[in-house]
Length: 503
Image (tube, rainbow, N blue to C red; front, side):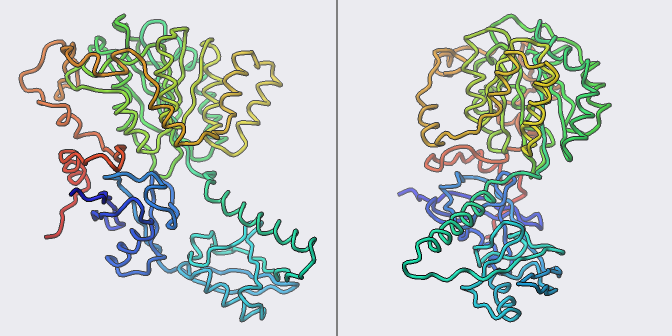
């Protein structure tokens, strides 16, 4: 009988990787306990990151969407002194703690200073309360110079409805703050890559951008500390002598971005009812995405992708998209022109990655869309400020309002219901359903040595798509945990991690 356990890989701070097996119903704390035992440290000093975010140890593996062959990153917090000010009534107490001390240690110190029992203490830093006593001070945001306010909790008085109501409100506020802190992603670096279709008339989108690119990038880098921008130019396989995909990696170098945009030539495109968007999605996986950054890929085009059997590499856009999703990349599907048959492609890019689907009817609006997307990803109120600026300066056309309204929406969908709905969606096209074209012969062949696509197979080309993917780091598996693990993929993951199982 097959085991219900799933394989999870954990990269340790030393660079070593370990392989663990856990049931989906187990909590993350059971993973960190094994790591703590292995590294001979207390469990609460171990933190795990998934897609760049520290994950809640109390949640189950299944709840967090951690699938078989997921790669997690472990951090171990080391002791450091932190000077903290504790305010109670009119007095201030200056105390030194260590980063690995727990909230329970803090409670004990406050009891010694104020005489309040732990049950009587209400501790806040700013407006945020501290509720989880097992966390270490680093994880609740206590750093050198932190000021903690301590008050005495109101006592319950039987029959005092007003007081009870106030206390309930206080508890609700505490819970709300704790929940909000779980989802707060502000202050993270921002990585945004814009992928432009450069075939035929679509090249004019990039032309519109480069006219103001220096001004746009300089403004964004000034307004959004830590933002990096990348640009991908996307042709088709028939354009291989020019390029199929060319890019400038994520950078803060405005000159490099402008030089690329000004010098990248147009491509012709095949006029064959599709473009090499699946290859652009593959190439996007190789960019220098920051581990802890908010990541977004903006795909701008008008056609659907090619079907899976169009090349010998059997590139399927949904598979390539899922790898990006596993890396934590959100995709904006921006559909230009009025090609309705390609609409499901751009919608699916957004839905599958929790991104946004936008329509670009007027190419002149691309510069405002460029800015709006970056401000939306920064997530610190700058998007609203930018929208107001557009309105005041008279740039708020009907089309501009449409994409700004769409970007302003907050995702309230139930992820389970959304997934079920997505699985029901079907398009009777080969680029959507590979089974419709499974007997098609490839039209293009990839030469790994020259990084070119040709119409005749090379005698020394790789024998399979798997061999040609060795340069792409598959950060995370996207297969559901109930699916059988692919032995070849597992072997490749272990090789990438430099993992050797102890005998």
